[in-house]
Image (tube, rainbow, N blue to C red; front, side, top):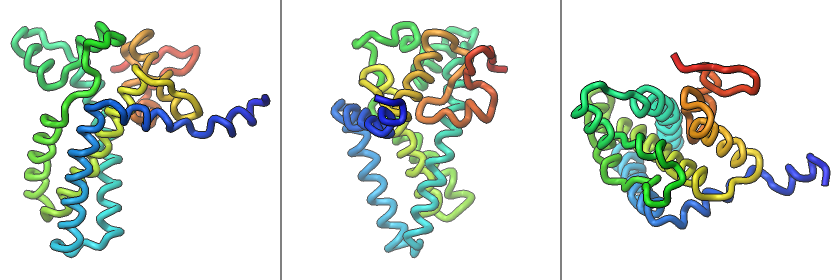
Length: 212
């Protein structure tokens, strides 16, 4: 089979999302964030008078913001090692990452967290945003970001536990596993590679790029 024929057969390779959806914690995220999206979108359209296309745009805007936040949380916070033991302990409670890096293939180490803490963060962000913009706008943006977080959890789980073929799946898997097994100073994005490319931390064969 030719290369072009193989690409057409494999397609984009998004089947890993459905495979990840079989995991019970991924299902918890779908239920939690799906319910939130329905309630917030419904309230914004029917109670807040937000046009459906505007609501969709705000939702997508929040999703895009999440990709930027995801990159910096991983790069700046999850890979920050405080010198103070108690601070390191709390950092790991809020943003657990060290154990995952130490044992990325250990099935006893959870990859997908429960949605409880992210949902609390979301409520806090909505209330803070409400100080700046109307409630429904803040809520739509944050819930859109929440669905970006769902995408992160699905992709992260899949890169460690699922087969990922096709153009998108294969690239995401290679991108993240390089970060784990070759160089922790590159490839911080999980659900997308765009911010690594923009901010200069994307691994390119033959070129070593270290995080600042």
